[in-house]
Image (cartoon, rainbow, N blue to C red):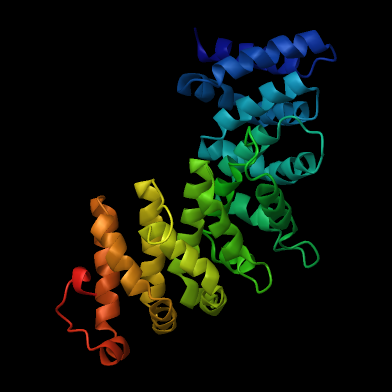
Length: 326
């Protein structure tokens, strides 16, 4: 079949999506959803993305079945960077947030999955952060975070993909600074989800914490992170399993260890974590740790503690000792 025939079939399909007859729309969305389930089909659909994407966005506001099909198609299409860029220009972030504010929306999980895909781009993150609006900056994020926390423990977990959105926006300095504004309690909120039965919540929140810790000194948010000592202590305990059951996922533990490593690499962070008895907790955690990457992270943390002249002076620890001797 020639490209011209493919394009004409696709144009006809898009016309059916725009039909005033629901049964025609339903048949058309079923075909689009099927095509969007394969890479070959996605490439074909995106040949007419300027016409297809607006048609699918309009159907998000239709009844549950049409909306579900449109969202599923958009989630698959947004695996492609060009689709994400086009959707951002079509103000998809604002549309998603409008639908999420509807208390009775039955496709919340799909809406957040689409938002997670869109925020893999910097432009999508910036739209969500609303930094160009003095009065609304951070409002979208506050809404997402509140509903994310309020829904913790519910099954099915429609909001768990919000954790991926938080990971995405904390890739940007603006996102990290907004989340860590004094009074937001973001670190406490993220650490609270490390106890979740949802691996996605735990993983996404651990990655967001790591992102925030990596550049905290440069972002001028280090003091705000270190001020929440109770959350830091909980984080250490989940990593080391001293007084509670440690995190079972090695990848999550590694994100937590890397977070601690970045904090310890700063003078202020090293002192706070020393005061929290982090070396003792890490020694006990290291004895039980089996994952080589987590062990390597813990060893680097130990060396950072030992290389701190103030810590050495206070404890008498020799610079050449291993983590077992901390």
